[in-house]
Image (cartoon, rainbow, N blue to C red; front, side):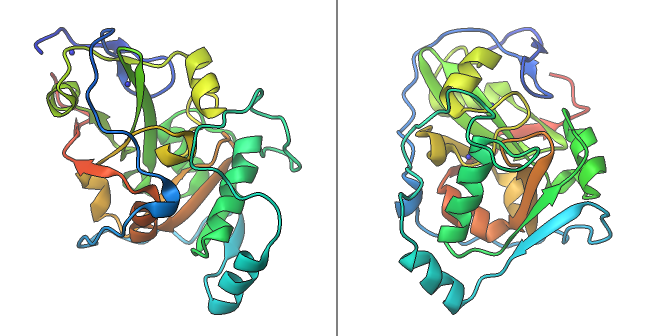
Length: 257
């Protein structure tokens, strides 16, 4: 699993397609659910499947009983659900374009036995660029934003074609002002650079919120800790593993506020 109230329209944010929002406020949101104990969310999936005509490099990870058994038997440490940021976004990576977060995320998903695809593609720094590089609909993109409410970070995930509705977020959290994490804060919190954060806040010990519009997608695709590596998976698997609070948090990208 990025943090004004009647305020002027925000300026451009430091690590997303969203605008910067104003700073500092008390934050009373609940703590994040641990990934390993997230309960299944049952929702009506009505989205369209990902475009399969991509020329990018794909790695398919099937979900079956043998795979689950092998995952349970695998030795070594499991990915922790508490915050464990990397000292460098590239430390520990073994493959070109992969970061330490990419490696951890891929391993974590395999251990949980879900079906997913790793997609290696041209570098992308915006949602539009990512959709083109992946050859997937922009609506299926899961855009992860990290914001700060006072000193408390929160992880918010939206469809890549929509914008954060700041008024709704403030009302939901019971706060007056928020701001996006700076690139330095983002690195310290997640081990990721801007536009590379995966949509699992629980991986970093962050409270997780997901926009309800994203729950209508049958499949989702998202950055995997890198600008050149993405992952696609079923939407219901994503929600089950992320264990987020689901709320109406977004507005149309062309809407003025």
